[in-house]
Each structure stands twice: as structure tokens, then as C-alpha cells.
View 1 (spheres, rainbow, N blue to C red):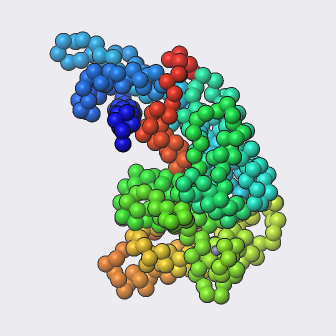
View 2: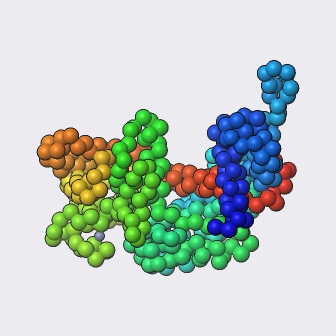
View 3: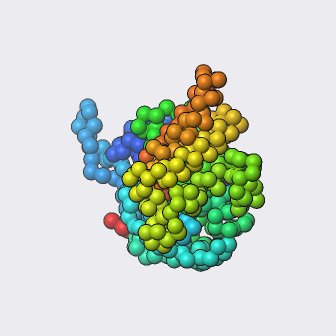
Length: 408
Ligand SMILES: [Zn+2]
């Protein structure tokens, strides 16, 4: 690396160091930042000036230091001035949440995209529309990054394969950016189940759950997805498809799957498979998957035997898939997210039955099953976390041109 590039790296990492300290410990004084980071006081002063010029930190009142009673100017992260945008694409919806650096939701936009199966362009156009609407709402605030979660494998920033949407090798970020010539913040694409897994992992840890090294996450919304977390980080695999538990085959001669194989977990755990097995005619309670799911949930709670038997069978399929993943990866925990968390009371007997043999035979190798706590918000919570982390790690993503008065 040449010298200017190396010094730019050092500067960026010092900006990040100081911003993270103010984020964790603010309001705090420059002398405290210098002591905590090991940076010289003069460097801290220069870095704070840079961060203030980007609208990331600001002075707030004055504290009084011990001995001489000299007032200290305290610093904190600015609320409202720098926004990160989280977008979730589902088979029929686009959900957008803009949050400021203090984590407050400042703008929300949920809409149907109406795109035909296999065509990403209308989805890109609709996402760009929601982002353009966010820019209008932002006024003097600055958009730092747009992070888009999709139900498909993502590698090197491109959607490699999204079976549920019918997309193949799609540069969604470029398609969206092409509709936003006047918006120059970066656009990133990530996998939705990976985001939900990260969010649930941290939410459970905050409740005191001690995670093992390797954790498998399984979730169901319209389809079945998953994620493999190693040491708290998403393991992507060779094609961004690691942890896709929905396509673990659980029977040799099971139903054909859209992925080309037979007997995949999703063919047992997919909402349509469950409602069919529960004897719920299509269209009961209204059109669309939400109505079908509501009817299934109503019957489960009412003790309907066919509905409960459908979930029990699905629990066995899920247990078999978890066993397969645990055997290959040595995972010590499974987290059930999305609707699987709601259905856990009816899925768990089947899961436990499948795990019982292994738990007995190799008793010293534990395999815990946890239930997610974030419901439908898990994916967006994870995306918001990633967007915010991006700004904290790379404050230069926000340009220096932000006026100190804007948005206040
Ligand atoms: Zn499959």
C-alpha cells in the first residue's frame, strides 16, 4: 500500500474510533476521548472538528471538570441529521425504515411492489421511489447509506439466486442507483435471513442467552430461509448460500422443489404445504398468504387436530433438517425465527423427537433450540444495525458538506 492510501486508512480508522467512543460514552469531553483512545489531544480536536463537519457529533452544553472548575465542552452524537435507510424486499412488499444515528425511526414507507415473478426491474424502480420519497422527507438531513435486504443469496453485493422471486444474478444495487441519479450515497444489498439471524442473535444475547460458537438460524415467512453464524458472524459460503436450511432434503422421495431437488424442508414447512396438510381450502379468510396464515393460527389455537398434525409433521421435518445441519457444522444451537417462533409450541414435539436419539447417544454434545423474540421486525432490525455499523466504521461515508445548522 502506498503512503497516502495508508495515511487515509489511519485517518478513517481514527474517525471511527472517536465516533464509536462518543456513541458509546457521550456526552463526553475531548480529554476523556484522548485518554480512552490513546490519541493525542490535538488529534482528537482535529478529528472531532472533522466529525462535526460531517454532522455526526456536536457540542452539548458544558460540564465542570474536577479541580479548577473549568467548564468542559461535552460531545454527543447528533440526532436527526444523518439518516440510514433500511429496505426489506419480500415476494410482494417493500418495507422501508429510515433511522437517525441515535436509532430513532424518522421515516417509514411500506408498499406493494406488484412485480411479476422473475423480473427485478419493477422492484428496483419501486425501491428507488421509496428512497426518493425519503430524500424529500429528509430536508436538511443527509442520507448516509441505503441497505436492501432480499430473500436470496447475495455474494459480492449481487443477488446470485433468489428462488422465491425468480431472480438470477441480479445487480439490484445498480438497478436501484440507475433510478436515483441525484442520490449519491452508497446502496448495499444483503440477504434477509442473515439480517434477521444477526438481530435475533443479539436480542437473545441481551436477554442472557449464551450462544455457542456455531449457531443455525431457521425462519419461515413466505418461504423458508436460514443462516449459519460462526463466532457471531454470518458465514456466507462459496455462493452466499450457506445456512439455506429450506433446501436441506429431509426425504428421498418427497415432493419436487423449485430448487430442482426433491423432499426439501421447504416442501413440508412452506405455508402452502401447511395449509394444504391442515385441510384449509385456498382463499379461506381472504386472498393472500397473510389470510391463510391467520386461519392456520386460529385453528392451531382452537386445538384443531388436522392443523396441529400438520405442524407436528413439519416439526419432524424441521428436526431432521436441523440434525443434518448440526452433523455437518457442529452447530450447538438453533434459533427459530419468523413464523417458526410463533409455531414453536406445535413444532417443538416433532423437533425434540428427531433430536432425542442424538441427544441420548452423544449426551455431552448439547444442541439447544431457542425461539426468536423479534417477530416480523427481525430483518429490518438487522438491516438498521448493519447500516448504522457502516457509518460508525466508515464516517467518511457522510460528506463534509453538511451544514452545522441543517436539520436542527
Ligand atoms: Zn429445494
